[in-house]
Image (tube, rainbow, N blue to C red; front, side, top):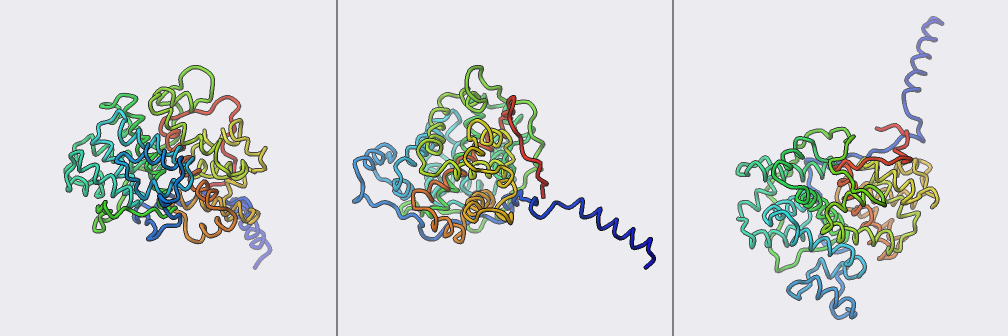
Length: 406
């Protein structure tokens, strides 16, 4: 080959190399949730339900408070392994399933759709029965699984289901869907609708990963003969103007945004309180889990606050850029990589795989492992809320690192 051709070839190779990210910097937006394959829960528990014979007075108090008919189901029996998790999850669960500002029929549609999207049997079983008691027909319950494109929905209910699908796949809601909902819903209704999908996605990921089984006396199961298909528009660019302006006053913007709807803000705050004040996880591990789910959902406000003044990730030995690079980065600490895989699997598959669960429980006891699933599941809901409401960065906030996206 003539010298000139050699030089041209070398220049081309150099140019291509310059465009490619370095091996150590290549990361890591994980694949989004599958739109054509339903997540699958476990056939047996990872966390055994706590038998009533082992309950303390605290367990009995919580069971009396949250088992309306006095009979705790497998969901509550399992969560009672850590009473503080019950205190974190159940107040907002009760509010959204029984007390929110949206009609009971709409609650049922959104809860069932979240359970279907995440492939969670116990939530589907429980809430299909409640939906039927609330007036939904068997055909309508089945149609929830068929999705918003099925024949028979009125236009507004179709839009509600479209919102659920967009939150699950895109961690956000398009302007067209939001505007259609806002044409009928007031502000509290909008917030309650979004948070219903978000919270029952949280519960689905937790219940799937703990292996919670449906109760024998709730015979409804996810329809096995309905194809799993989700069709949503491409995710739109992040909002540059908030859909809800935070209230004036002290505190960060997300708290002042939820403060617009006090009946929800208080129970929702208890879900986050477990993570930030009660959980046994070290701040280092907690911030890895929170930052990674913020990265996966591309919730820049969540990222900024946990790199910055709320989480102070660097103060706890967390390198935010390493979190962005993900679990397959060659320089990742092995257990940190396990935590990152926990998050990515919850985001992609709504469940932690056996391999990752075994690696997690090799380093954690049961309460820590339950908390490691709870933390990114809860902050996934926060990410979806932040993106949907358009909570904006505040002065001095640090956005995402300049790490090449795949």
